[in-house]
Structures are given as structure tokens and as C-alpha cells.
Amino acid sequence: MRIGGFTKQSFIDWEGKTTAVIFTKGCNFRCGYCHNPELVYPELMERSEDIPETEIFDFLSTRKNWLDGVVITGGEPTIQKDLKVFIVNVKKMGFAVKLDTNGSSPEVLKDLLKADLLHYVAMDIKTVLEIESYQNICRVKDRQLLLKVEESIEILKESGIDYQLRTTAVPKFHTKEMIDELQKEFSYCNYQVQEYRETK
Image: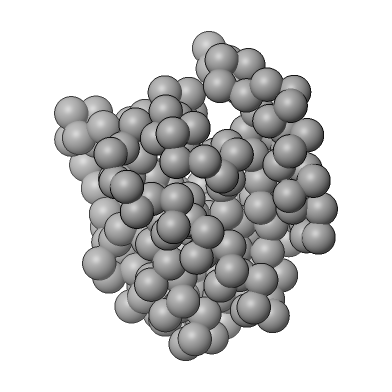
């Protein structure tokens, strides 16, 4: 798995848990406000060497009685071909796993949940569920994009595990009416609106 970043201890990436955070390289979206462009754009990704999986597992083996879990984020983790194998190995070490995703790979999400590999999922809802609005933010031409996102939402609703849907509100892309619509749409679940902050 292509790993571009590794935070050995975090108290903020999974509420109520102390975790390690793994940042995968590569993403199928091109959101203009992304805070991790070095994990998204190929020309930036190649400026740094991938972190070997052995380095991750060697560290985790020393923290079995200290960390509650591991957060896998990105980039977009679900485009990693060996994500499932990686999670299996993390779980064998006794760690709970949280996955951050943009919801564009429902088949991967469904497979991971069916295999009982995830304890929590945080899924980004980029904007209101309209194809033009979604494409405007994600900068992708896939006409099936919205159907995939909606399928991922349904998978989480039926999964029985804890999950969060969240939107980063960016003034350039989101109006108050959009945010109000999203809050109403997802009032049935743990839905959070995050304020966009400019990176320095």
C-alpha cells in the first residue's frame, strides 16, 4: 500500500480514542480546497518516498497496550489495491480500524464491512447530492459518481456500525441554503459540518 504520511499518536482523529493515523497516497478526486495535495497530485506525491508498511507494523507492535486503534485516511484509501490485506494485518494486531473515505468506491466499502474489518467509517459528503454540484467540487467527469456516493451512504445506513457523514463548508462552493439542505437530508445520523480553514 502506498503510504505518504504517518502520525504515531493522535487524540483528535477518532473521538474518544488514541490512535495512529496512516495517510495513503493517491486520490480519484481533485477538490480545489484539499488540505493534503501532496497525497493527491502525482507530481507532488513523487517528491517523497513511500513509507514502508514494515515501518508502520514495527511501530504498532510496540503500542499494543497504548493505542486504541488505527485511522486510515488519505488521499483516498479505497483506491489502494491492497487496502483489505493491510487492514487484516492491523486487526490481527488487536487494533480497531477507522476508515476515512469519499464514498466513491461502494464495492470496496461493502467488502470491508462484510468481512467485519471496520469499526468506524467517516465519509465526506462533498456537497448537495446533485451531479453537477458534485462534479464542480470533485473535478471528475464520472457520470456514475453520484450513484456511487449514494450507494455508499446506503451501505453505511444498513451496516450496523458507527459512522459519520461530514461536509467541509467552503464559502466558494457552499451556500447557507446548501448546508441547510444537507443538515436536513442527514438529520437521521451523525452528520457534521466542518468549517473550512485556509492552510498557511
